[in-house]
Amino acid sequence: MNSVILKTAARLLFPLLLVFSIFLFFRGHNEPGGGFIGGLVGASAFVLFAIAFGTEVTRKLLRIDPRILIGWGLFFALVSGIMSMMAGDAFFTGQWIFPVLFGSEIHLGTPLIFDIGVYLVVVGFTLAVIFALEEEN
Image 1 (tube, helix red, strand yellow):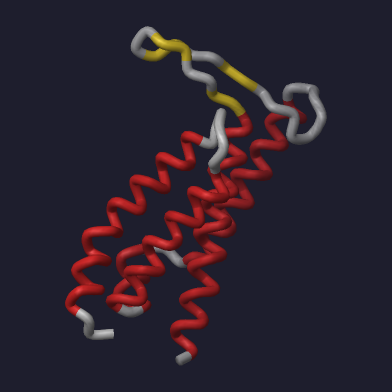
Image 2 (cartoon, rainbow, N blue to C red):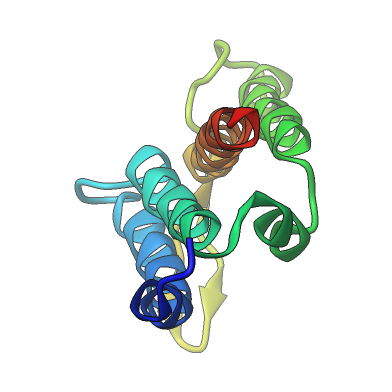
């Protein structure tokens, strides 16, 4: 598509959508949001860019095949379940550590690792489908 307005809007909205995606990802750790909705917003940034500039340019911007993102996401989800088994609990039981960073306690645990996996799977799957449909035309 050769729309100057669309290309300009895509360039401006791309980083904004990615930052919003990361915000939704971390907000979902204790409130609504998380890996799924963050992944959808992150994928929508790349989809908007693909509509404006084409899939070939967007694939170069992404720098990694979306199918590899799916594989890494499944790996992170599996690791989060195995970590609880290694601690002697049931599969996918949350394991937590509470390190203190800059004077405040941070809640880190296996649900965060699982959410990273969900984020990567959603971004990878969405982009793989959209790229396949776009390249078919």
